[in-house]
Amino acid sequence: MVRRAPAPGYVEKEKFPVCLFAHPAHMLETMDRRDEAARWAEWMAAAQDGDGAAYARLLAELLPVVRRMVRRRWPRPEDSEDVVQEVLLTLHAVRHTYDPARPFLPWLGAIVAHRVADGLRRHGRQGGRERALDEVPETFLSVEANTESVDAPSLRAAVASLPEGQRRAVEMVKLREMSLEEASAATGMTPGALKVAVHRAIKSLKAILARDDP
Amino acid sequence: MKTEALIETLAADAAPVRRLPPPSRRMGAWLLLTLPVVAAGAAVDGIRPDLAQRLAEARFVLEQLAALATGLLAAWAALSSAVPGIPPWRLALPLAPAMVWLASVGEGCWREWLAWGAAGLADRMWTPVCLPEVVATSVVPIAVMVVMARRGAGFHPARTGALAALAAASLASAGLSLSHEEDAAVTALVWHLGTVALLTGLGAVAGRRLVRPARFP
Image (cartoon, rainbow over all chains, first blue to last red):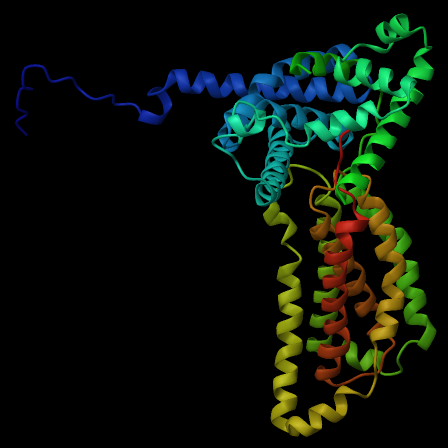
């Protein structure tokens, strides 16, 4: 058999099976992940026995993993951290269900999947009741909202017709927006008496305005 | 609250917890409580006089073994459904013997229909009504299973409820077949398999309330 000389630039292919040597970095990563999972399983078993330090280490190492898992499934990045926290709280609530004889990652993955599905259901339900607004209908800058009410004269007259104590109390506390202490210092009335006077004044005003404008 | 602060709070609250035993061991405990109840249910009417003769029939043995396997696998699956991370396909395992059971009884009904016609089937359908006995025998095992399942994570309460009812009702049906003298497949289909299906459906509905999902601490 005559073998032709290889063309310039030709590199002979690996004679070993590709899967064994082609991706050493990938293999190392898989081994790392396996080691990590074994370590987490060990720490979780310790946490189940009440080892708070092992539990703190475990949760700290799991945090970026849980964040990645949640972000892959949760559609809105702005509140994905809420879901991450719910996952951690649920993990804490069901930590007794982990069996150290079983692999750790499927257990964690099931908790993440459950919390994300629960969050999506809740979000779907809320979406039915709420509507996103592009513009909030604010009126405090519009002319109409700031036009003096046509009822102002009748309100003024009603305030004027109040007994002296009630009139002064409502003018200071409601119209000039003084604090109870300031109004108390100005009038010599106790804050309690002022509150009662304001309450009675408003009740009287309602009665007067209702009588004038049935 | 920042997530890092939450982790500190949770780690400070890491009190020792009682680890949930594996589902197979918990199923053993459930059977210890359940089998005497099923035996008592079967003993109320006494063992059927033709039992030895029926046990020589391949069809009868196949159906009772299928019911037994459905009950055992459903009990294992019900307890497994309360543990996060067990692959969902394993929870569907009881469907295989349930299908064998249904196929065998269904084939028997087909033969009876050919032999007796629709009127004959209707007459025999109403002879022994096993529904109350199957329900009465299943109540305690279902209740025990629900109490056990509530110790788990409860992520799939409807599934757990359905499997708990399927387990209890299948075992009750197998147990009662040793005392009930019904020969017609149509009776087994309606009053045994029908009751099992009914209880499984009710278990799915009630499971949502009875098997509480895990909430935050």
